[in-house]
Length: 234
Image 1 (cartoon, rainbow, N blue to C red):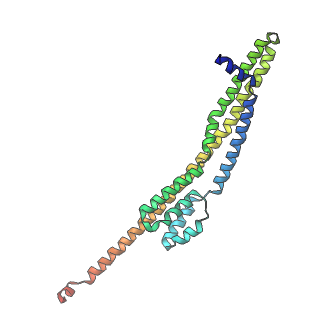
Image 2 (image 1 turned 90 degrees about the vertical axis):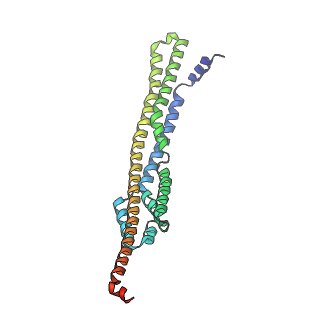
């Protein structure tokens, strides 16, 4: 069995099936772009406003109210903040671990299907090129079978084959643009989340320091109240 002849039989299919494959991939990529854009739009958030709300909650001692108000907020920053504040009784280490865990879960949701866009952007041109190569091989097979047909018939088939490369590029370019833009939005959401987490940890540390100052003040008042005269009386 000649393996070359077996592969040559595949070229009888031409480039048309590759074109249909690229069309299907294009529809699939557009659906991902739309779904991811809607997903991120619904989860947009003002990081500064969230940070002010967190600081105000700590100042008023209204952590539970903050959690209730933002429970339905689907953004990564809000969900990470809620996860951390829910474990605030466990101390700063528990809060930090809870926020890191929730951040990892949220990031997986934010990056869902982005790898598909990146893969299409990198490989769609090669799929189109494969269709072009198949078309060229098929054209030369037809020329060998019918030499009297001349180059006119061959050039017609070649022009049709080159369309596959063009379609591959048309599928890849939007996928690459969407991948870069969506990845940028995910990075922005992650940065806001990190800033929010640091705001919470800073507030917790500040509260600890305040409690430490109060205890120091109590010790100072006690030492002042206990005068040497009081000791002599004892």
